[in-house]
Image (cartoon, rainbow over the protein chains, first blue to last red):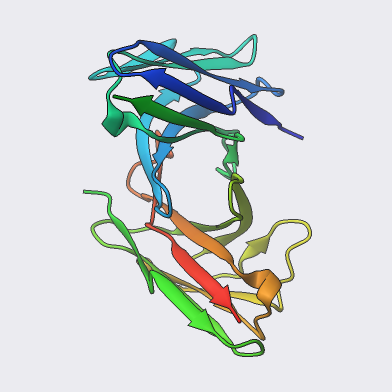
Amino acid sequence: KQEVTQIPAALSVPEGENLVLNCSFTDSAIYNLQWFRQDPGKGLTSLLLIQSSQREQTSGRLNASLDKSSGRSTLYIAASQPGDSATYLCAVNPGGGNKLTFGTGTQLKVEL
Amino acid sequence: GAVVSQHPSRVICKSGTSVKIECRSLDFQATTMFWYRQFPKQSLMLMATSNEGSKATYEQGVEKDKFLINHASLTLSTLTVTSAHPEDSSFYICSARDSGRGVYNEQFFGPGTRLTVL
């Protein structure tokens, strides 16, 4: 059974700092991996999707990497801003039935 | 594009009543939709996979008679919580897979429905 873990569970950083969020998964047989953002009481906003054949994806200040063999993905946020404060979730897709398994989430707070 | 809506966004009901939640794909067709629930400060747990024109597939431990799913069209899936009790209070989120984007299988998520059972 696939298990997805995110470290750290919570993170507080000053504005402007670069930071890395980690996601690890136990079964490397994945189709793709997605990073999401969730604001309190809201749904999920998709940030980046990495296919199993890809090593990284970039969107603005965000960069996500994938090392499938080691079961790891990282989300790098450059020059963090208070508006980046949210919970970040990673989810792996095993393909086939397309059922996502979500990580435990990292709650990020960027302070002025 | 790729917008998913949910209705209602928030519902409060009395114990023993049934509540219906709608999930719509607004600008794409979705043969498959997914229903998740999320407890406070926890991650999303998949409840069931909704398939257009056929029966839903439920995850282990999810009562199919309590959480009725209907996916009658390519843009609408409904989740009915029957005889709701306080322990059913949760945040319910749906997602939809664009049938036309077979290669990437990306899922798009709705804004969620907050259910409170008194």
